[in-house]
Amino acid sequence: MFDKINQLSPQTRMMLAVVVCVLFFIPYSYYVAPPVAATNATKPNIQDQSESIAPTPSTEISVATQAAVPRMEDVESSEILFEVCSPHFHLIFDKQGQMAQATLLGNRYGEKGKVALLNASDLRPLELRFSNKDLMQHAAHNPYRVLSAQTHIELTDSPQEVLIEQNLDADNSFAVRKKFLFYPDGHYELEVFGQKSGEAADLGAFFVSVGARPVADNDSFVFKGAMVRKNDGKIETFEDGDVTSEVKIDAATFLAAVDRYYANVLYVNEGQSFPAAVVVGRDNNPAMFASFSNHAQIFGYVGAKDLQHLKHIDPILGDVVEYGIITFFAKPLFSLLEWLQESCGNWGWAIVLLTLIVRIVLFPLTYKGMVSMQKFKDIAPKMKEIQQKYKDDPQKLQTHMMELYRKHGANPLGGCLPLLLQMPIFFAIYRVLYNAIELKGAAWISITFGDFTLWGITDLSVMDPYFVLPVLMGVSMFVQQHITPTSFTDPMQEKVFKYLPVIFTIFFITFPSGLVLYWFVSNLFSIAQQYTINKIMESRKQVLKGEHDDKN
Image 1 (cartoon, one colour):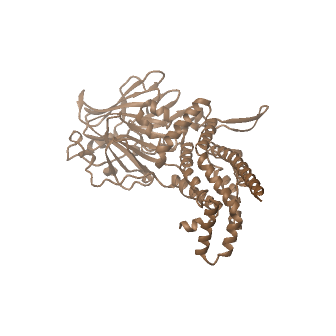
Image 2 (tube, rainbow, N blue to C red):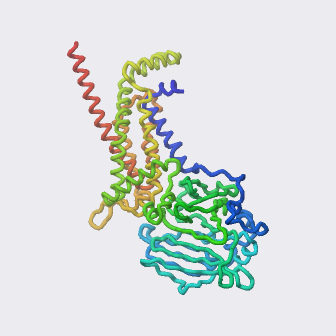
Image 3 (tube, rainbow, N blue to C red):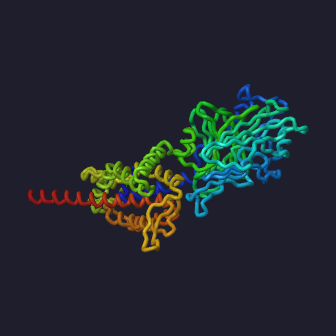
C-alpha cells in the first residue's frame, strides 16, 4: 500500500488527504452518532437498585411497559395552569403539571426576538409516571390546581415559588404535590412529595420525564437526542431513532434532551445521583426518565446551550455542551475563542485571531509540507521520465523512484502527512463553530454606502445570505493553488485539482458564516506563507546556481 502511495505525486496525495477529510471527518459528525450505550439487559429493574426506592412488588411496573396506561398528552391538558415570565424567557405549565411551552426571548433568537423550544404534541418535561397503576389512572384524569397565591409569576431579581397539587384517589384525601422555585437565570428547583390528610405520605416508585428534545433548530446534520452524565463523569449519548429497548442507568447526575443549540435538563448537585431510564419514545426517539421513591428533589433547566451561562448555574451543566469524539480538544479550543472574544469584543474578529494562532502553531508542519512539495516540483520532470521508462516494470520503477527521492531529500509523505496531522484541529474548529450558540445573532462586519448596506454578516451562526464569504473562500483557494508548486504527471488529476475551489465553494455555501470565515482567513494566511516560502526557495536556488557557476 505504501509503495503505491509513494508513486503518487504530492498534489495527488494532498487531494487524497482533502478527500479523506471531507468524506470521513465531516460526514462522520453528520451521520454517525457518538457511542450509544448498550442495552443493559443484565441489570435489575430501576426499582431494584436500592432498598430505599423499592415499591411494593404487587404494584410495580416498568417505565417501558406503561403504554397501556393513559398518557398525559392523550387527555385534554392544553389549558394553562400557571405562567412564569421574565425578560429572558416565558414558561407555560398545563393542568397536568407539565411544562407545555418554553419560549426564549431576545434579539439573538431571530427577527421576532423569540423562539419556542417545545412541540406541544411531544412528551412534555416534568410529566410524572407512577409504578402504581391506580395512581397512574387517577393522575391521567385529575388536573392539578395551584395552591400558591399567583398563577402569573413575574421574575425580576429574586426567585419565586409555586406550589401545585393533584389528587390521586377517589375521595380526594391523597395527593401529589410539586413545589417549584424559579430563578431569574432560567433554572428551577423541583420537589415532588405525597400528601394525605394534611400529612406527608408515600408515593411509591415514580418517574419524572425530561421531556422530548427541543425543536427550535431544524438542522439535520448535527447530533440530536439524549445525553446522560453518570456519577463518574462519563457521558453516554443516544441519537434520535437509535434507541430500540429500555436502557437503565444506575447513577446519573444529569439527563439532557438536546438539539444543536438548546437543551431540556434534569440534574442534581455534584456528589449526588439518581437512577434513570432511557426508553423508546415517539418516532423511536429516546425518552428519558429520572427514577425516585416517595420523594424527589431535583433541579431543571430548559434553554440555550450557552457554555458560560450553564456553568454559572451549575458547573455540572458545562458537560451539556458536547462535541462528540473530539470534545477533549474542542472544549479548550472554544475556551480560547471565548477569551479572544472577551479581549476584542467581537466573535468575528475572535475567529480571525484564532485562525492566526492556529496557523502560527501549525507553521512548522506547514513549512515542512510546503518545502516537500517544492522539492517534488523540482524533480517532477525526472519522475515523469522514470515513469515513462519503467512503466512496464513496477519493481524497477519503485527502485528508481526511491533512489531519486533519496538523492534529492524528498519525502513521499512529506506533503501529505502535515496536512493529515492538521485535520483533527480543523475538525475540532468545525465542531466548535458549527455548534456554538454564542455565535447566534453575533454580527461581524458591515459595509455601508450612506444609509445603504452593501454587505454584512449580522449572524455568524447562519449562512452568508449574499454568498460573499463562500465566493471569497473559493477565490482564495484558487489563488493558493496558483502559487503552490505542482508536479502533476496525469492531466486528469490536474483538471480535478483545479475544480476543487469550485467544489469547496458549493460545499461551504450553506455553512455558518463563522466557519466559512475561519476557512477563508486560513487560506489567506496559507497564501502569505506559501508566497514567503516560494521566495525563500527561489533565493536558495539562486545561491546554489551561483555556487555551481563559480565552481565551473
